[in-house]
Image (cartoon, rainbow, N blue to C red; front, side, top):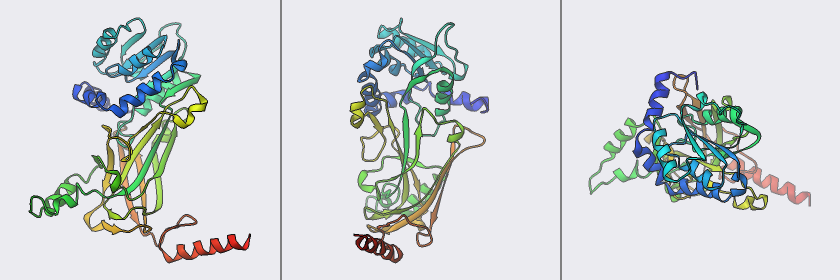
Length: 356
């Protein structure tokens, strides 16, 4: 993070002094419940342990850790919201357990004589997971302050991608109060075309359940690993509709202290099929002349890349290229309606029968 211009980092941290941002996060029940359940249902992991909360904000995650029995919590906050976090800590009578530090994690030092921490807790996720680049700081904390057998909350993250319909940006302007406003919708999309739209996509508007673009093991991932992601896909439409955009969302999972409960691990999901979160979903809208009606089993092909902006390391450049499904290689067997895939599927089925 040291290679970012100081004013960029400065504006980033100052932005988090706006309490409205924290109100949105604190009233996001999916976010709150995921962290609270992950921490308090694993008291055996936190009991008498030392915890580092990276980007503590209002301090609520640090309080969860103290409630779970942590011996010591170092709560690090780069903005002057640290003062409010101290008040929250005091209000909940955890002054002796939680110590709030006002500094960037990159400038933080453990108290003299203190060992590395047992657990790192952080809510670092931005839109489409990577926006804001805060995971870099969590990785720094992991490498410099976490014990070799330590835990991260969360410990994995997955980015999903799926084609979708976006009626709120296209169809709703076909007739607005009996007036055709397509030109307004067209100009609105043009005005916002330099970045993805952050909005709630209804589950019914997903044209596919989604493919994984990236899976991150937070114990192993490096900052360099986060510089670029790319996927080239041929997706077979599962639900008929209007192909108007590409929807991106993420899931995060948390460690469990009981191996028998893996099937019931805590998952924070921002999927359209999950309860609404303040992250919503990120949607890349298609140009109007690229939108089309698609039926079940139709193939669509595209290349999607996320790459860190060279000048502003907390931002990512997103590039979507629509491809000709006829010319792209399909997975085998492919369920789509193209003749080549129907013939290949029949051939594979015949081979299976012949081998019986």
